[in-house]
Image (cartoon, rainbow over all chains, first blue to last red; front, side):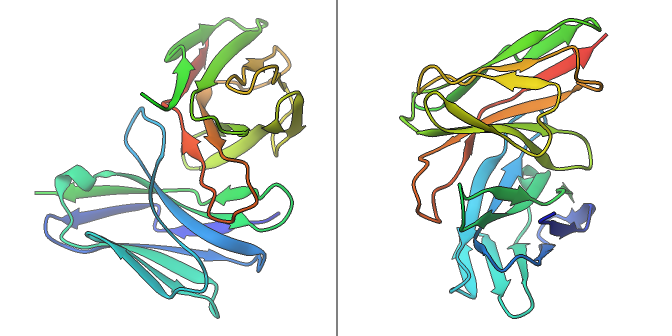
Length: 113
Length: 115
């Protein structure tokens, strides 16, 4: 079964620090990699996304780094804030068929003051 | 406001009962999806529909059924055959095009609890 492996499962970071979440995949048919942010009791919301022909994408305090040869990608949250406390999911979209999206298992981030 | 609505927000079901979760979108999206979310397991695909009057099973379709009679609506029925239905259910939609950057947008979810 296609998988996207995500780590760590949980993360505690001090305010102002850098939060780093890592994901790895095996299926070379994946061609789009979105990250979602989910607050408790809410649906996931698209945060940032990257295509594999780009090594890095930055939007505000959020940066995706992508290593195609290693089949790994990561989310960096700079200057982490308590309002960033949420669960983050990486995902990968398949280029074939109906373009299925496979999700990682999620990382629960807590930013402490 | 454009978006995806799900109702109810909370749903309680007795064992042996069927229940239907509502999902409506006004984004004019062709494709719609149902996911189940359990703690520590991420999102698992139940059913998806790329076009009206057509739908396919996802990874965990057993015990669930759907219909897609209208473009904007994709209700999910949790049947009594679903052995462990207590979970958070998420509906999503996307343009359904072939672009790899076509992204799924999620509704607020329905939390189903079996009593």
